[in-house]
Image (tube, rainbow, N blue to C red; front, side, top):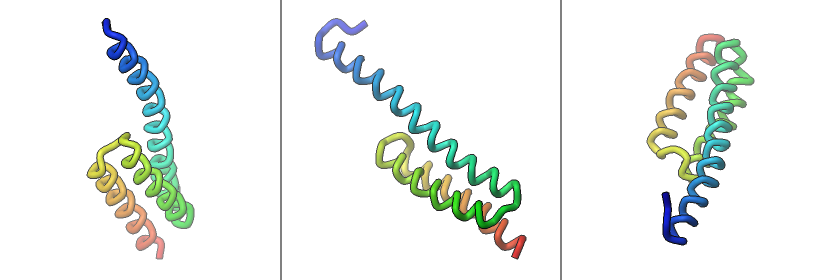
Length: 91
């Protein structure tokens, strides 16, 4: 357990940040899942729209330090490949 005032404050801050980061991570997963659901349903217009939103959420998560930039890039790449495959398959 933290003994010094500085360590106690850092423990409080870490707890607040942990809760905030959990909410942000949940938001990120929700928007990625919306893209995957639209792809599975075969709705290309909704998939493209959901991908645009998810892309910005991924980028903002990187800026907030929730995920690493390479993880975001990998996620965007994989989602984009699935959306393109859907658009090409239904075209």
